[in-house]
Length: 196
Image (tube, rainbow, N blue to C red; front, side, top):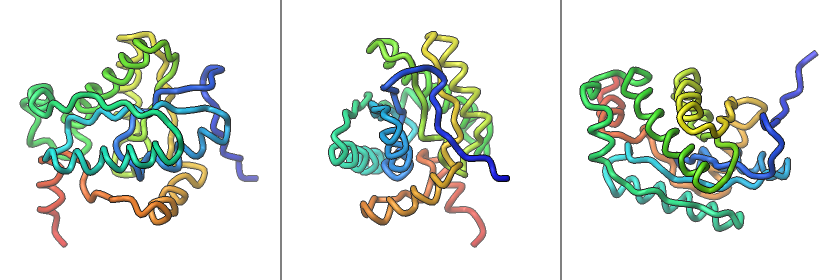
């Protein structure tokens, strides 16, 4: 008998800080959270995204989606140079390498700090919805941020239970801009250099 997929927060709460990488990845997660009476506060912090035009496209789509669902979105500062400094020495790493883990740690820590500053006891991330990302790395980064702040990280595989399929449906329904690379210039170069 197939086990029923159920979304259950690790603590009793009606709010969560949802770190969002983009609108397509947020959509099905937001819908699922609202169905169980959890109102996410969308936190857009992605200093890895390059160039700034790409960053703004993703941010604006995320904002549009938040407004359509009467949700609050907070935009953190875009400081790509700070991100470059943080991952220095790992620029040539392949996807899912040490560069990605450092990137996740930086973004999860900022998300947890935002949650702490706003007395929100729980945070999670849309990064865990992408099949291109290493779920273990994302969870490692989330636990790192939890240890630094004492705000609980909600470790959830947001690909399961039909959420990936629903994401694709909502992508079409909302006519979202859908990027074809992770975000940073290094992932973009690797994507472009892949054999066709």
